[in-house]
Image (cartoon, rainbow, N blue to C red; front, side, top):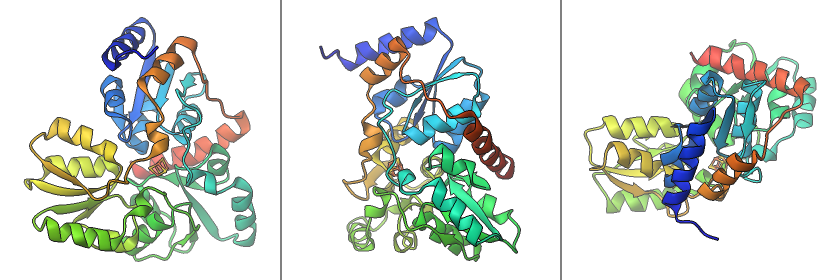
Length: 306
Ligand code: SF4
């Protein structure tokens, strides 16, 4: 039976009050999910929020690597995923075996791993990063070490350009952000000559080159809310519109493409969240030897980013 969304939201909020439960959601989640979450943020902020929360149970409304990250950073606590099949194609494009083999062939290299990866890949990495801190972290790594940045070639190219440092990268990309083409953006800019273009660094370098600002979802939110401008072309997943308009309802937000929708993020629903809380499923676990090694790479990220 389909229940109206506000009834499901109320049921979730009631359940939340009855137990030690913390709900974390990504900015790309559906609006109604962001509204019932205790914390909404980008992947870096979500990792910190999970690590810093004291709740016995953490429900992660995001794709699988986000729930895994919470499980890695929060040993002894229960991490729930309302939809374990929600995954990230880019994260799944690389394996731990590939990294181990690369390191054998390049002993002077340091592997910098985007959080959009499975736990076993993080476990064989030197340090993790997110789009909000990649630049800061790589800036702190020794200049004489070769950097292998995995798995997002666009983020790698964009960070390399900013730092003036060459980064070897793995040939993969976010299938959502990689859809944006420079020609499409040029047309939009012509149609909206006064609008500022804000894009995510997972976009292609030629798209970034046209932007007024390139940054993480949290960075884009911050930019719009602090800017005195009125019109913005938004080059990231459409879920970001909701938190921006909550803070700045008067801004005119133009999506750079109607295709900026991540189906995996959107496969999570309020009903699945309620079911997850009621039936305590699906509990996300990570093998302890992998968890310990992956936690080192994540904690290194937190240390270097702070
Ligand atoms: S938006 Fe891209 S990087 Fe983020 S989960 Fe979806 S496919 Fe993965």
